[in-house]
Length: 246
Image 1 (cartoon, rainbow, N blue to C red):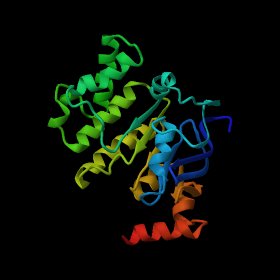
Image 2: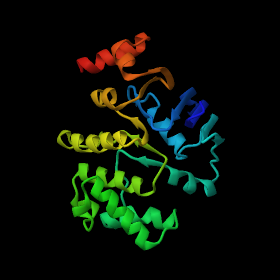
Image 3: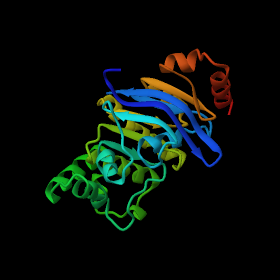
Image 4: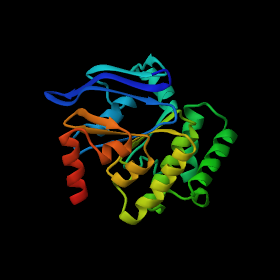
């Protein structure tokens, strides 16, 4: 546990009478890539939204670097600068160029200079293969290009952890590969990541650990070769069987 950068203890989340998460425990160590898999409605995205302060848990505690995170509005921006998030729907500012989309967080949240923000933005746009599009607006880009810009924007904040919420689910099939390739490169560089995904082969190949969720609980977690090859629980086996047959 000494290396755990994120730790979730007894986390619960309800919306009215509907319990979405129940007694969730797991940790993320520096340099790990954790994929969270499971059926739609199993609570995967809600868990990420709780970690990134977009939802406040109904129970339990989330620790970052050993300290409980505060959901007070004044603490959110500083926390999100260190724990970035990439959404399935991109969430780019449509009125800004690609370059400005990547600069704005550095200037507003990190209080960096315009020169520093621009240098970072160009560096990470190069990294994700979008430097040539820096003056384009999001409406001029394909879905895969938008998602690569969203990843560059998250990297510009120099986060300690990046959360990915179904980063390919809004993409046409031919665009999925280019986004997964960028994420794979980040994994190779040692970026700590938590990825909610329905791309099973990708989860198997990229992850240090895989978490299977069902009906708001973690059913099973383990190394990908164990979870995919020899699941301990019938619910896990049934899910993977449906997926393979689907």
